[in-house]
Image (tube, rainbow, N blue to C red):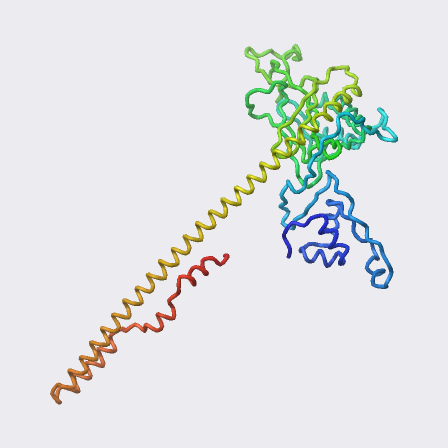
Length: 423
């Protein structure tokens, strides 16, 4: 079973060179699973009946491999562990002077973007954090951090921004399943602050991205919080200004960060080890189309910074991988030398023991041989008794078989090879 990385080009060549079942068997997966892999990598595959037509001698055209797109994976591994840097098209900055190409058929303000359709119901089906922010059960949703009260406003804002981007032919969609990007954590406090315990926002399974050509930029719409005095009533923190007359105001009210109804848009570089990030506050009553146009102009300029950061990060990742490979090789050599030393020591000790046993055996043999010669010169009346004693003595003496010991002895190379064998 092949577990090495497979590129789009290699997979395209394989699925058009042999039936899907045969290729799938090579990787230890089902043909339907491999078909899904082809979809993730945007690799076209033969239609039903292709191989029958080919066997009948018909000329059937091979669908060429389309150009790679940022939203697709570029390599696949049976183990499921793929180097994320292999799944990224290097971002190239958009020209700043060239006018953005718009859609031939622009979307209207009344349309609903695909990421917004059905999102409201899914957000409301979840629960809320301790400080009132929604946590939907579904992971793959548009990246919006908001309260129940601010949900409709947040989705309306996100929809207007996404439609403006789509009108510029900038795709807005969820990150592909290849997990090639990173998303920074969200802080609902505009100015940030100290670490808070018990406040953990919902984090989508896949980031919301806008693609400016080959440059991917992450988007998060956040409802800001504000610090207010609250009282704990019926299991919830309620601002003291909203308490009913029947509720008594606590003597020492607690302060909590609660949703304020004000929003900001965060854009960030999703590429590994890059830091670019930008935020815009959205004033109440602001023309969202004009706001989105303003953001779009800044994002276009930012593509140069993001591309530059990506190049630096990629080079650093390459150096780190090289350093890690060199370190592992150093450890391998040290471990190998240690095994060789241990093998030499063990083999030498065993050999020294064998030599000692051989010397002992020679001494015992020499003793009995000399004893037998002495008995031969003894008086006749004593010989029978003495020979009988000699046989008994030989029987009681354990004389090592040095040849068997030599067979069992292992050379340093043999001991080393045994230890090197994978477990």
